[in-house]
Length: 276
Image (cartoon, rainbow, N blue to C red):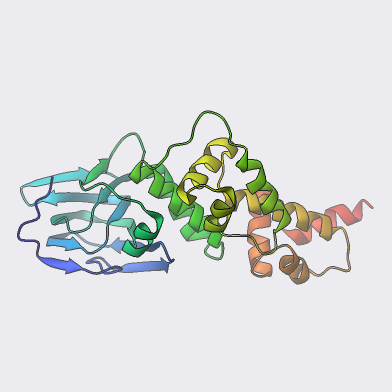
């Protein structure tokens, strides 16, 4: 385990040695995509916030100066706050996705993260929820519910908080009903959890286990279904349909609709109206 002696520079939240290509902040996390184009040895340092690094591609070693551990592409590592380490970027450079957990959010959620560095090179315990969050970060920036659910899934994995049981709880149906009733102004995971009487991290993990998707993905299916019904009426413009069904704008509707159906809303409308 890396030592806490001679820590070197302390990096604040959102601060890195590698250039930041994209960034997104929520009340729970700071998300950053980093790309280091050339080989580099990063001196000993520590981070103010606990964080996860997902290695997207390239050669990357992390740890104490004399005990660097190699992380191949599509592997991940969790580091608690205050752990001192050094890193080395290989000759091909590297790209990373980092998830920094805001301390105030952890306190509000009552979560305690591990005090040791955890490497995930094989089973994907950290990697797969990390990649789901990366996908949400890259493709669905307007979808707060999607980001929030992915963050809580990841927090549940790292903290080991209250794993789901083997049968679906009765409150899950109520959560799904509320999402169906409020597609234009959906509740947050925290609000859904408060109504269900469970921890938001537990809700996110239970929803994934029994629905095989996040609440945000479930909501998208409901929104696209509602949009399909309105597309049958030529009086509804695409912009009006987007607003009515809870999309942030028409381009958001187009993107999610195409991902769900393989068609754009305009082509879908042409296909169903031509058969009328």
